[in-house]
Image (cartoon, rainbow, N blue to C red):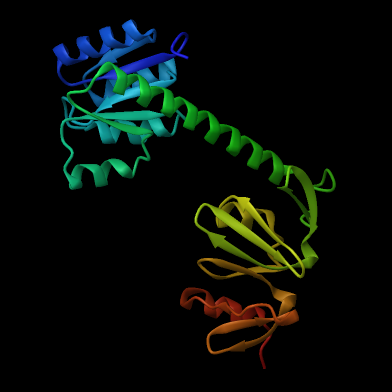
Length: 251
């Protein structure tokens, strides 16, 4: 796959940078730029939009490679960290930017090649999944953007869910689970994205990990919501309790 792949090299040491560039060219990659500081790295990434950025964690200047990676991440460009520092503190800071890999110096050309190919593959799959998710959740029953229905993909089919049939929605790591009376639909999304698709007068966030349909609530018991059809109790988060009580029209 090497042919046609554009790489930006961000490395503090000029000799090491030259070695990396030579290795990349030998493998068959295109080096579209090289620099030794965070500010220039961000500028070059914006200018060339490379397929991958190889980023040294320790750079010249006030900003680190982690700072640069955080900004480049917003451009939807995968970053692989190059580092001779494998201590836990450095890795913890680097993880926040969600890099597509780490290469410890010194490294072999084979390690470089494998890391780049894996990063490109993962990024492609991630981009396809995000595009598919955005498309699926943009589908509605009419042009006015009705929130009465939602289309989700399950078993290679697009299935229409009537929102009046939904009891609650639960967060599960990188997924959400939409629970109806008879079926559970697991979708790659976030609670924040799902919440935007719901009619605010019909659904209410009652916990960091739960959204309930208001007209399905039949009781509150021991800090839990009890829903129709003997669905499992839903915990009530402390920061959501006041709004919930206001919505339930208590006397």
